[in-house]
Image (tube, helix red, strand yellow):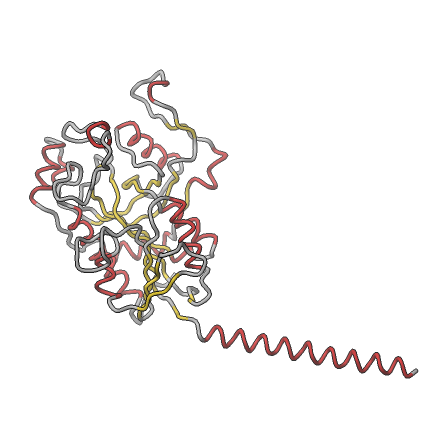
Length: 351
């Protein structure tokens, strides 16, 4: 019987050790959790023109200068080398890079970084865009309610299509689950109500540019304003009447809650990643218009893109953006600041 007694003793000792290990692990988890840096707002611009502060602003600079000057800088765990996350007083910012792949991988790396607590964070994807002819003007700011993937479906060259004036995109229902994502509509309504009356700026040159490009069109003569809308994300920087029709058709086909307003390269990827990470309900997308989605004032693909040097929308002599770029980014910041300050207050949005 002695051997049975020994087995019982060993079993008891092993049980005590396991309980001790579990308790230690739980204590360690609590300690680790309490040491995490809490993030209430995660800002995700896509590019900066030069430095983060003090020069011509890109998508990040106004936010960085106001909220993150002197912030701590971190290399993102498993992130792209050299990409930084700036953190200060519960607000974090990282420049994702352009295109859907950079946006998805960068967002995933940030949200997976175990040093930060994103469980209560609002994600704000922000940046510039082209916008829809007929219902937007340069300088507008959009609160996005749905994001569509331009590249899912079937595209054909217009020269292959019998109806030369028709659309060049064809719907494929097999892609529906991946091709569109709807943001939290209750939150979007609260955000839009908060910011819809914020005054936005324009420039005399931009106003004249719009009126000359779209003569006698009442929609083109108004001042910029905050709109709700659907954004269409494509890896190509596209323009032209065919693709404008494609984007409109996509928003209608997927029954998006608001019309197509903006075209950019990242937001479907940011939204899908937020969904995978369980944070879609707290995603807010702010886009500002710096050019239109059709060719204007005699511009052609060859004249804009046919040289070795890419057209610089941020240039003061841009034939696409007039001089609206910096003003539009300030409009974006004015809208975003109201949202951020509300989130950081004692009475943030509640779902």
